[in-house]
Length: 316
Ligand code: SD4
Image (cartoon, rainbow, N blue to C red; front, side, top):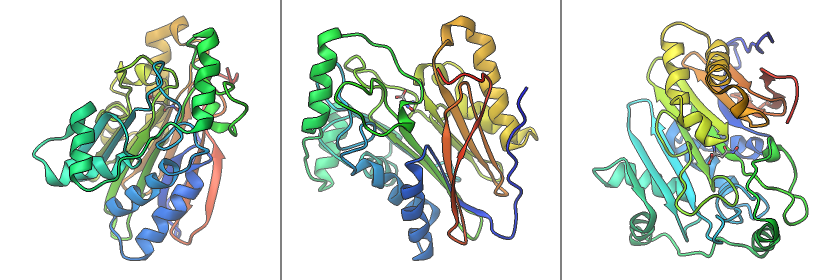
């Protein structure tokens, strides 16, 4: 059994926490928003927008890899500690899925809009229509069409974009912020698994699967193969464990172990990672396989990208 990495609450508390190496740039945008007087909700939205706008990130927003029919479809959720939720799934033609999710939360009586209705709502809100499929992502898809093989590769999120077709999986950003007054919010945005079936929705936009937060307890986000997270309502489970007294680290480990026990050989080679931020600022991170990384930014502005511990020593 691998011990967790402990991050003691210190006089330089954690302000922003997010998944993968590219979370660093997102964290910096989120911290700048907090410093400018923004709320935790403003901060996670600002952070999530960074990878969404990055054409070189083939897993989130603009430049994301498409589904097997060539459509880039986005899933996102935003949530605050008061149980306010907005989400979109299978959103097309709009870059900032997280802002659409926030508008769903703030301007509709609903918690989620999907597909054409989500796109129409976003356009009605004045968001621009943008073709999300970039030439690089289209080239990767055309390369993939030659084999048509769907096999998620673990930890591709952590790798720099390679030649077309080399990245057969996607990454997600899950980002959590804790403002100076202790208020928390969280967001998650993704283009989902590369070359997924048309209409497939992963864990990311589902409250309690890709993301969950509860006042006085903390927040959790997930990354990896969404189907495996959804099966156990992964982040609801992590937050429930924290509510019951487990540390964020122990809670992430419990959820990963549960997946491994439940699924056995079916999860061989698949990655799932959980990241959690307790209400007092403690961090937890754990994954099935080696290779999951996360970015921690403290109120002083110090950011570290750290490797998560994993259940299995192998990385694929
Ligand atoms: C999904 N969980 O759509 C997302 C993908 C992901 O790291 O997180 N990849 O299943």
